[in-house]
Image 1: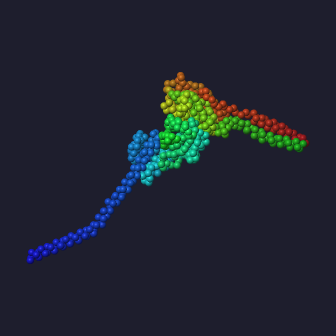
Image 2 (image 1 turned 90 degrees about the horizontal axis):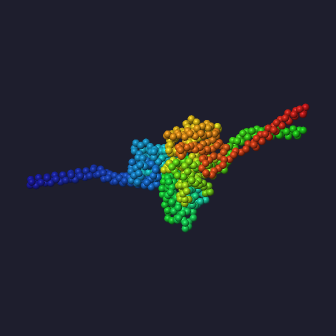
Image 3 (image 1 turned 180 degrees about the horizontal axis):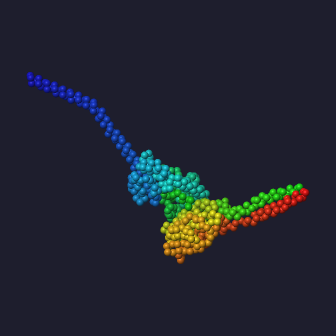
Length: 298
Length: 292
């Protein structure tokens, strides 16, 4: 009987321990639970932040790649390009020679000595408002959006005021020259192209080339264009589509003559690209950036 | 009698302004006629261009000027060789593309565009081929046509490759020192007269007596001659009384300079004014005597 009593007390003590343990567990869950819940949220927040970061990185990389490809394809081989180290690496990966790159480290004071500067977020942060107001006032192409945006800017070697003045003088010369081309009896100009010529929006190399080519044979200007996304309105169009003035059996031969005329030229009048568009037209593109002062001659 | 006096006074009144106007107008006549060429050209919307070949090792070329707007205003100069400078050609104002072909090349071959020039009314330009053949460039030089009164203007083009750096002095005055091949100086004002132009290269020099008259504008070109350095004196303008003159005789056509208009009509006006004033004055002096 005494053994039973002892066993009974032991059983009671065991039950009490179990109850206490369960209670403690409940209390522990009640107290620690919210923290655990909070912790369980944290990994979710980090995942979102990570995906946002990943998206930003992807946007920056995409803008950098687009800018690098555009420069490799559109910028003249003589132009010196200033860039931050990451952008310069992207340019080299796109085939731009290291000799044409001016790498701007964090201690670089200015992008002078280059023809173009690639305004990445890093360089915008480094130079601040001076980049646009002092060194490179005009955007010739732009890629991406928001904080990841990359602008390609023309460097004003003699300062913004001198650059603006030269650009304005160049535009006046382009307007005058464009008006003369419209009056040239050997050139037929579409209405849209006339508007572009009158506005002085055509690259001076194109204007000079068209005048000389028209002296060889009458031609038709179909349209002006430019593969420079986001370029300032002050930047002239570097491309044109032309055709012989009269279509006919000789049209193909005339197109080939026009093409050989273009291929015989030298810098700065040698186009970056001159290709036949089907059997009826010729597409001509000059390299960026457009030169200033070419029409004034002196 | 009163009527006669009235008529005399009218004649006198008419003579006075004739006299007063005649003298300054006659004085201005030469100036007016002097600038008449420039003014008339400016009014008619024309300027001048001359083309020059100053690239020593570049073969002769045919040079073409294509107008942007006027297909009938094209200029072609055949076989322009080293040292040649065409006379000024009068061209309508506007833009032109300058192009070249090797001399005698087929007209079917493509000319190579070299420069653009914007011709402003009354202005003159030299489009010069400069530098070595490998780096040949056509440079458009804005030519000066007028000088300060009593002065002459001089500019130097260094086109000697054999003596690729030269110093140039005129009458003992240094005009340029260490002038590099292919470079062009700006115009400098010099006192008129005839003096010796001394061009000194590395161990070789040239002496040329050059008259620089007042009101004239010159471009002096240092060239490689058959027997060493040679200097060509291109007369850009002989005062504003005449159109720009041509350069070295190279067989090109060109404009003949216009003579200034004659001052005789204005002298006749002065004479008539003086005569009327004298006659009228004498008559007036007699009038009081006639009254008394």
